[in-house]
Image (cartoon, rainbow, N blue to C red):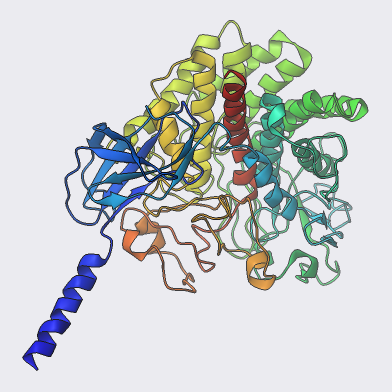
Length: 597
């Protein structure tokens, strides 16, 4: 009996010892040949690391031993963490690292690692389309909508054709702020990196080239909807539907939610009044129109610039729309927040000068008028830094969009004030940089809802700042946040559904498509990690499966690849669209380096 007990305890000891206690986190997509490359070693138990080795995955031969190691101590669920810098390794190939007895997953070094990634995210955008949905090959929400809050009582509850655009996330609400921003971001991605996009789909999103890059087709889908939401001068609408939408999971072409007994399947479309709104007990804190008017104006202005090449008449139409929306915003400054329904939740946007700055800056590019440059700069001085940057927390979408691209246009094209704009961009970056200096992932983004969207925002600013100034002091920060999205994070997972397909990436996102199809929603950027303190207070949230990341969760930050987690694992349309610029820039950088060989 004693021998049996001894063997049993030996087995338990061996089992405990054999379980991994340390991991090396890398970017699953890989690295451009000359880019900053840093992996992170994390351990549940204290350990020491002063060097690491890199191996050729094809030959299994060691190719180098490096001492470029920096320790950061405990973080989150880990007792020890180290940054392992292997930027000097630039030869194309497949590799893995070994450090402190731990082996990393394989990764690739090649200037083609980001090829096709920006187009990949467009799969999710097409899947989010309302009216005709090319993924389902069916129509949905074609009855939208009936007007609410119209100042003319005779027009209230009457029909207005606003069908189209994109569903906001995994529900079917549609918001002007997120949709206009998504439209602008898609246009900006093409504006900056046109060669990074292909043409494999037509304007309806169906397979088949039409002579127009797919990203432009997708942006025009957004512009078409924005035009419907602005049918006449002074007539602007901010959202379709409200949280009465939240009535269980169903595919969009099977949506049977009714908002009014006499409206059929039509959904309410909210007129922008500049005053608080809410369908029932709860109201938002709206105090103006400029946040939404500015978003209309900037999308129309950049749309005119980009679409001139493809549809000159359409582009000409957008010029007048941009001017009118900008003038409307100047007339009634302040923010328009989304309207709540039965619950007290809404997008709590509190700033508008960034939207008006971007509107003026894009109009300056469109019309080559110095007046717009000066007005943009006046707005910029009111908010030099987007307020979430450097903050520990913020309300949901309180400072939106998460990056002020007006600063970029000013820093690039406003000759008199370029230096000031660049200073503003650096100030925001520095705040995030300083906040991330105490953890091995260098992540200074607050872990609030949609933290991944904030990460994309600061990545965009980092990339544009480096382009403008050639200042390389933040290259490692950019690399750290870039690689965070592809697996160099506490959980070792990508944050984009199925990217890469063969790696660890969201496979069970919070979406009706994945639960009822089951359909994949490839390309969608999920909300991302949140503070453990937020997670512990969420109501009505329950994981459907055992947590595969359980040992990596902490009071600091949590993330779950589980359908039941609507807070960290729900893809968003605007976050995905915002990622298109950064991925297109990485592809363009790789292409340039391939060409220069």
